[in-house]
Image (tube, rainbow, N blue to C red; front, side):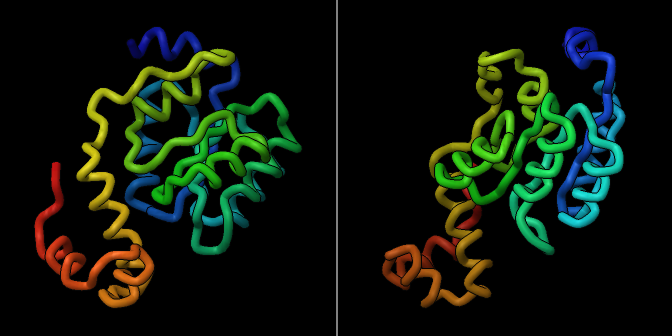
Length: 184
């Protein structure tokens, strides 16, 4: 499969990776390099925009929410500088509205975290209107629900009452869910 992917990368294997999760960014850069890309990394919107302006890559993987702003700003700059770039937007905050916004500003595809290097490579190299194959090991519905609850809980600064209010859930029910281990 790697040979097929390498053949599809094209003449310009340049790849911009923008994510503020530094360990994830390093792992992804190594994995994409093994697949034949030449990754360049950025941890902020400002750094991503600077690279997109100076050396617009053929491919890009951009996190939606970064510490210093919105990853869609990087997508817009890249789309302006290199209209043929294939751009995948990654986010841990999957929602239809953000997917629509990402595609409107020029993203080729949109993936929810956790996405692995195989999912990302498939999305980057999908030809034309062809959809990439479904993930080999998708998260269970229980796991997706648990991840969403954990995310909202963290965004509410680990305040159970506020999280319960935002999720329209009884506080005690939320406490029971938070006390359990994550589902597989």
